[in-house]
Amino acid sequence: MSESVQKKPKISASRRLFLKTKILKKASTLLADEKEQKKIDRERTLSERVPPLQLSGLSVQDLQNLCKELHQKIDVVDEERYDIESKVAKNEKEIEDLNHKIFELKGKMKRPALKRVRVSADAMLGALLGAKHKESIDFKANLKTVKKEEEKKEEVTDWRKNVDAMSGMEGRKKMFAGPNA
Image 1: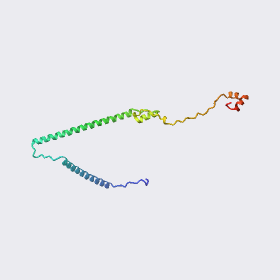
Image 2: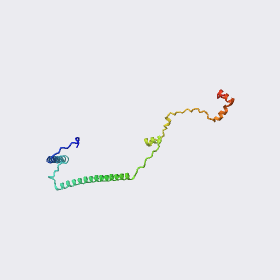
Image 3: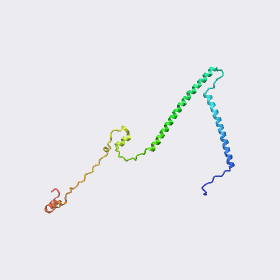
Image 4: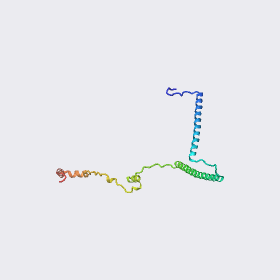
């Protein structure tokens, strides 16, 4: 083995067992403390929010009325809880159905290969600006136009006619006199 890989120091089985039992004892004491703290918190919140019942000195009729009121309140809370549970169940079912539909659509539909489409500048602006953009903008109107000067083209004629016209004495006169003669 190479020196770069360090070996873990071996712990004896008895030491490992001792450490495990120590950790378990600590966890059990923490759990017991947590349960006791929850019990104290529960009693404190109940004493703050719910006044203690004074049942002594109440007649049987008053106790029955009190029980009926408590049962009615419990029924109202149960109905609200049931309504909320039914809404949650309905929404979870709808989410599950939509996820299933999405999964099916991903499998069934194959996306077509996209083609390159040439789009005019007006169409691009329409897509970017939305339906509000209706008038077309002439981008070419803002550009400066550069006119090419037409090169003077010499007339190209049949060279044989030119040779015939320049031959002889008349041709010499024309050549020396210039084109305006």
